Length: 284
Image (tube, rainbow, N blue to C red; front, side):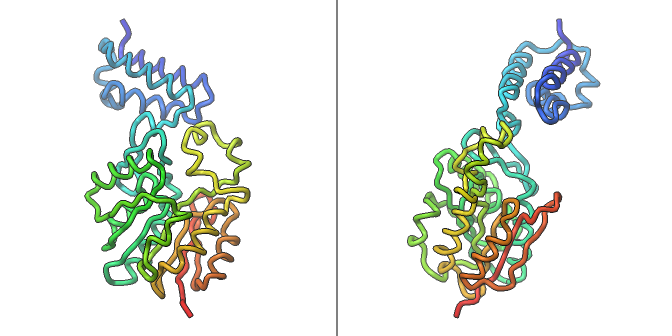
């Protein structure tokens, strides 16, 4: 007979023996998902015999994690900006870093003092679009190409009850399907990893959709295309905002200046990286 305490300790030991970054945290999360027991529950029921179904479920979760499947995929969700987003294979996992661009956008939208029209390009799970819809008086369109990601986007928008219209399309091609001067804000967390760097990323990250990561030879393909082709869709005085990869702020700022953006500012993440940029469009 194995007790719940023994089961937990075994889980932690197996993860610790691998190259998992935070084995203790992962062990707690997987154990709770399989058994329903948090720390207090483990203290209270630790000496009870572990349910066989729980043992079987936990074994499945451990094997998936040891195979470097992202923890959030196994758990099925990731909290971002106070909302639990459903995630799984085929959709990029929301990161805390993305809160930096959300904060810039919220400040801009609230400064307008009226309802705004927003489009979230490369929407993925809907992290940015949902956060903006729930925290500002905005009508949001979320645009995503991937079938898998679009399924999660649909589920998350439905669960949030946010004012969001879903649009399936390729950000690099479908700009002509939207009218010029339509939006107060265009925001995107596009693929921005250099193609050659993909293979050097954490194994967990490489299990996320490559299409959501690969930004071309210099990581800036999407910044160039969006800045050029989507700028006409902004109203005069509207804003364009991006999440940034490391050392991309100067390049993206130059692209924005070329298209007529002013008052450009960047914002740092907790690690000190320029993680987000926003600028307002002044049309001639």
